[in-house]
Structure formats: structure tokens, C-alpha cells
Image 1: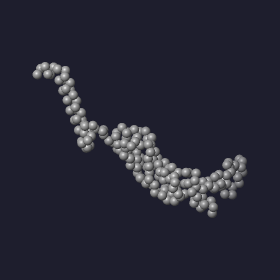
Image 2: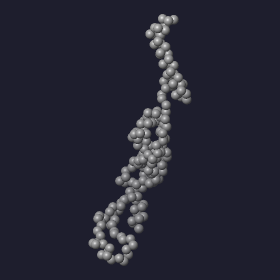
Image 3: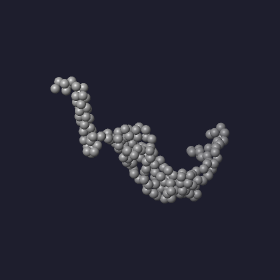
Image 4: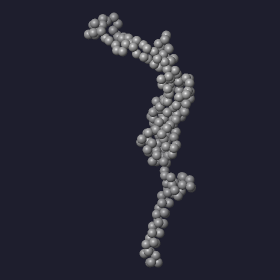
Length: 186
């Protein structure tokens, strides 16, 4: 018996056995709720994070159309491996957007999409859909006029050292066609 205990192979085998026992003990604690398949090869713990005020981008030909009803920000919840979640939250190198290209003017319900997040993550975006109104863009040139508030009937030479000037004298106003027609073509 003394020969066994003093043998270097005995020490190696006992050390290997203790290392395996320690590994199994730790993996049982971490994976108590995981499936039996991942018992011997744990996949790591998962984490969930919610990012608020993530900018919502709009993909649309802004030269031809105007969109209304788009929230400025959304809430993005992600769940997955700790390292991947931590990297996504810290770097925020992903896009959240709605794609309105190919849609005609009118009211549409569109899905909020994401790009640049790892496929290892479960992603939930709130709101998942957005109701938007697409209108044709119109523009009109308008003369800029000077108007004094509260100085009715006052001689301009009493208020100013010289005649006020306006530059530019004309501006281009653009927006939804319905608003342009309502406000400037009356």
C-alpha cells in the first residue's frame, strides 16, 4: 500500500479524479436548470439586458416622401450568453430600423427590424410594429417678410439706426404635400 501512495502515477490518477469531481460539482451548480445534454459540457450562463432610448432609423427616399408617426426611440431587450450580451450593450454597434422603401403613400403598419446583433441573441423590440403615414413631399418658394411685434405705427427710424435687411429674401419650404397646400395655397 505504501508503494501505491508513493507512486507518481497514483498521485496523478487521484489528482485527475479530484479535478473531474470539482468540475462536475461546479457544472451541476451552474446548470441545474439546463438540459441533460449540456451537463458535461456547459454552455455558460445567459444574461438578459434591456436598452432604452435606442434610436429608431427610417429607411425611405426622403427626397420624394415624408413620414409621420415614427417614434424617435424604441426599447431593445436581448438575452443570450453573458459575453455576447455585454459586448452588444457596451458597443451598441447595431441598427434598429423600419424599412419604408417600396411602400406607397398612405397609412401602413410596419415591423421594427434590427441589423448587426449576434445570431446567438434573442432580441425583443418594443414596440414590435409601428403605424406610420407616408405622404408625398412638396416644396414651395416663399418670400421672407419682416414683421415687428408690438411696434404698430412706430416710425422705423426711431427704433433702428438703419433700415433692417433680410438675407436671404426667399426660402424654400418643404414638407408633406397636404400641409403645404393647406398652409400656403389658400
